Length: 305
Image 1 (tube, rainbow, N blue to C red):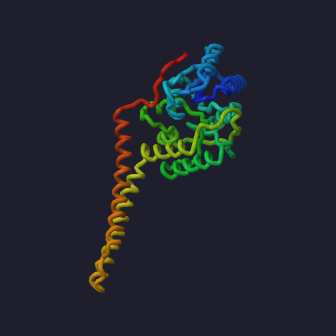
Image 2: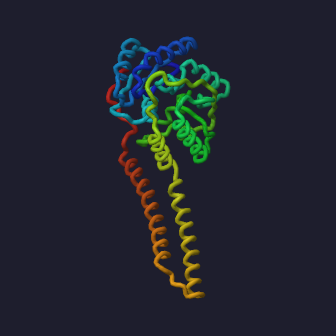
Image 3: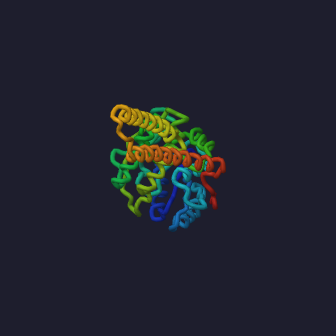
């Protein structure tokens, strides 16, 4: 059984996989640590699976290759990798070489020094586009407020195996790993690491995908939209009551006709609040439907082990 399982979620990164494995192997050999690399092909449409299969044929003892039936997302693919791990520690790393494998020793040193259950590699400057950085900052800031986390994190992590295996109890079709980790432990540490530009391809994250992630995070893991409905309904009720009192007073004192405009404004305002509330309820009902259907977070089509 290896000491370290290194999980690499893969999506359309055929050009970087061979170099990534070589650098991981060199780094772990330098540390004199036994390891296994678990490549999880998350529905790639390029030659990624062919490259992974070739690497597996050349290094059968240190590589596990898993191919998902379609694209399920990075967090779900990482969860699949955890399910196939069998080591004392788990490392997660991106497939695009933006996280240099040579920084793995920093994660290990920090965990040993601080007795942490989880260590994140964080960056002083992320080599992403401005839109991606802004979206990530919003998600981190929201996570800090909603889940009382430290508002930091990345996909470059070192995790104790017993903590990583607890992820397998969470079988939602949408999985957000960092919130789950925060639920189970407060012994989380951070270490500064380098972050490089992508040598190949462009990032597949778009503003829309980040918005979708934020929406799912709010609905699956919080009750914030429902709370906003309560406060919004209370606010609209107070405003409507005040407006009603004002018009009644004007009618009694000066015999001013209420008028068509006031009626339309009141109707449109109350209707918009009702429609918004129904929309939020509908979103929650759709998520409850998905959970009750018990769709798994991923589906494996092929495994080379």
